[in-house]
Length: 174
Image (cartoon, rainbow, N blue to C red; front, side, top):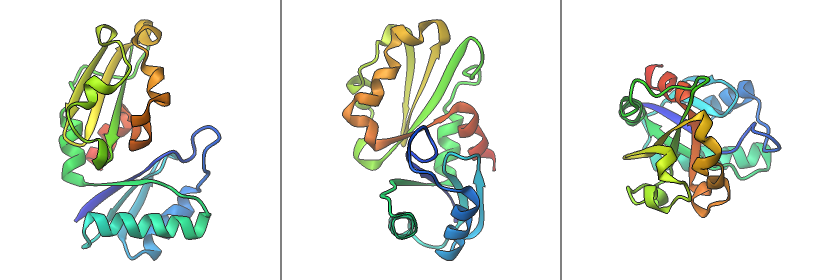
């Protein structure tokens, strides 16, 4: 089965640094096949016959052993990633006028009530919940008014991993 692993919080700011070539090798050593990475933010595409829970545990353990760090990993099937990407309205982009991101949700956070729990001002942001993700779009001129940046300090932030719309769409096509 085709899977995509989304590593949370690596190679961003002062976070944990992981080389993508070494990450690819680590996944191969875990027994996964057809392994490839996409950009430097911890997106790994691979094949496995194992179940998601087993895969997640295997990857997190291997990352801890090799890096000495606890890295939270969210594993999605290819079909789940495609379904999420297909839920993004076609005119939602990242450009000079707007910003669109996908917050992939860990199981503990994966429910439609997440829309009401986040400290954003809904009059300035469009939110869509789809199983496994929260998708948002905000006009750049309204970014500060939307309070989108306050998500980082919210308790839910630790149970999501965010990718921009371009990455979300790419992962669905690879």
